[in-house]
Image 1 (cartoon, rainbow, N blue to C red):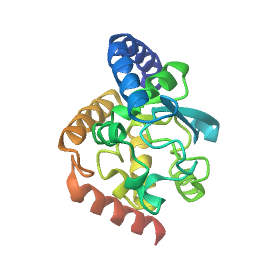
Image 2: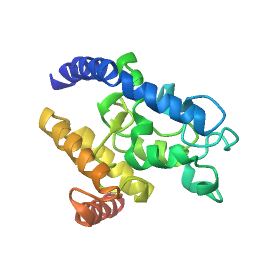
Image 3: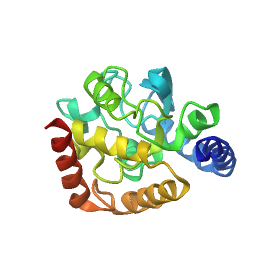
Image 4: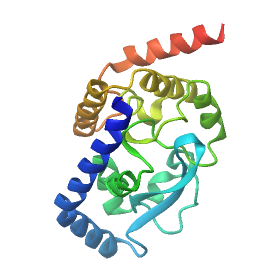
Length: 209
């Protein structure tokens, strides 16, 4: 029952947030344009619910000549591509705010597995084992507050699967506030710490045996 209510709640919250945050959107847009040539928004093909592709929106945080469809951590020198404004936007996760548009459109949820790049085949395949491709991807999620990009793919997929198996209003609230703490601390591992990661590793190991 909550899964149906969740969509309505996501739509209403995101629509209100877009209206309230519109002045902030304008300030960020001006900063990006004065800081680096190129568009304000960055669009990228991602994997949505039931593995349907959609274009995710972000505030552009990297130079326009950055290689497309490549995770930042795989670039030879990522820092060389990140703009001055982009460094702050990424640190504070403000670059993710335009995804409120994706949520209003029904392509994403506020809480859920982060949408994989269309060419992250290993992550997509691993998520199939846990049903994590069967729900709308989220602006933030359980894996993000327990490691973010520091997580190995099997661990990330397992945590995404844990979320899918335990979707509830209170679990979403836990992920929401965990995200706030994560952003404030500006680190990759928060609520649950390494204990959550180690438990997920053990669970993955058990599943493979």
